[in-house]
Length: 401
Ligand code: ACO
Image (cartoon, rainbow, N blue to C red; front, side):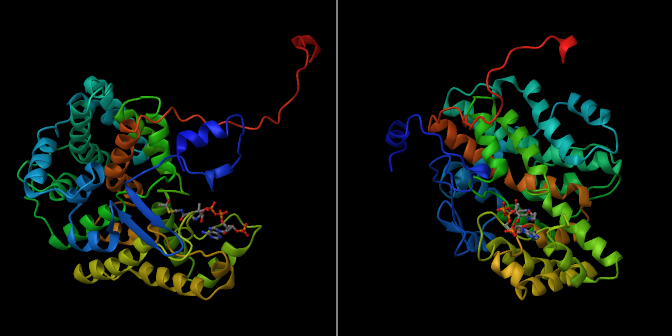
């Protein structure tokens, strides 16, 4: 189908599709997803192979530029990112001004938007060179914002990374380094973090990505568009589910671990409770990311010598759902967020930071989708509606209302 011809042929006809369940918004060459078969590929590479063999920066490069990088390309990309990783000291004042109770996603979205004020040249991108500069800037600065968001919540001094470390190692140092301590990278945590970031790196036209594309379609700058995407990710029906899952598993544990009681609540249509981390708009068989994360959760907890009772609760819930007609008929399976929080917690990441970690992983996907949208010269995103309000009526003065 030629999209331009289709647009002309259907001129004047408005389709209505709440939640865009059957509406494509663009043509894209970035991520392939087959929900019936449980297939996910970035740029043609299977998610299973990428999670096993690649590192996050290589995957970020492939998503953004279309091909896996050569050694030289990867080195240059990393070098350019490192030389753009300094965040203006005045941003620290903004971080300081947030109350300690602020949710990390609110802080992250605000700081990402605030970056535009300190990097005005990144707002109007008129050439591919401008685009590249904006991309390496945000790839460099975003991890600093993520780390500062966590350190603010933990009352730790705001730090800078190290140019001698790899991209993911540097993120770990910025997040976990304690004052007066020589931080050492734990390779188990590093490998697990790499994997989690890769698994979250893109997922075609989901809620936050569509938000980034639609905000960017007005030619708002990259950082402003990303800030909009971060806000969309925050909700518990999307990225916020990883926090909600852990809180739910904790609540079940506190309540005596009675998983059957919560399965019944999830099925009760008079109860707003949903089994968080279950179900997906597109996956109607299984979420391939959840399979990989489930194995990783076992590995990480074993390697770190942690016994977390909520992992057993999660596995019980999954097993019960697999044998329950309500879940089977509706094709509700664990999604990417069901096991990720258990790993994040084992790494020492506070629950409120889980969705921020999702944003860190999704950054290259958002960038790639924004870049594709701009290079394709897509028109401004502007859906129509069916008006169901009042017909024309006369104005009544305030005394007569
Ligand atoms: N628990 C119980 N019932 C559920 C659940 C759940 N987690 N998810 C869907 N259902 C039921 C719905 O009540 C509905 O039942 P009905 O047909 O009897 O009315 C049916 O399954 C279809 O659900 P919808 O909400 O219509 O499906 P939709 O595609 O709109 O929503 C969503 C998908 C938002 C992911 C949903 O499954 C959900 O709320 N899951 C829990 C939150 C979650 O884990 N979100 C993370 C998604 S992954 C991501 O964004 C990274």
